[in-house]
Image (cartoon, rainbow, N blue to C red):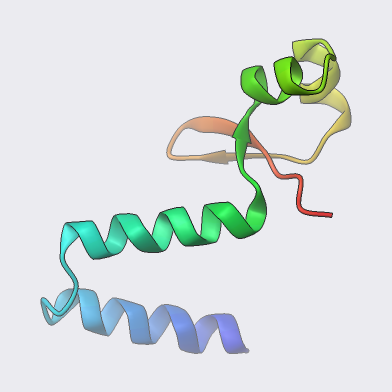
Length: 73
């Protein structure tokens, strides 16, 4: 699968010291922008819905121990 190839390549580059912390943050931000990641609280405020409504009825993923709404449709 493509994701396995990407993960393996990325792991090799990180372990070889070819990516800085800033580079890795940039990757996280890039992927987050494609996912349109927003914390549940911010998503609820932006869409005028309750926190529980966002949590129960939206696509939520836990990343780095923080729950985010994925809204990239």
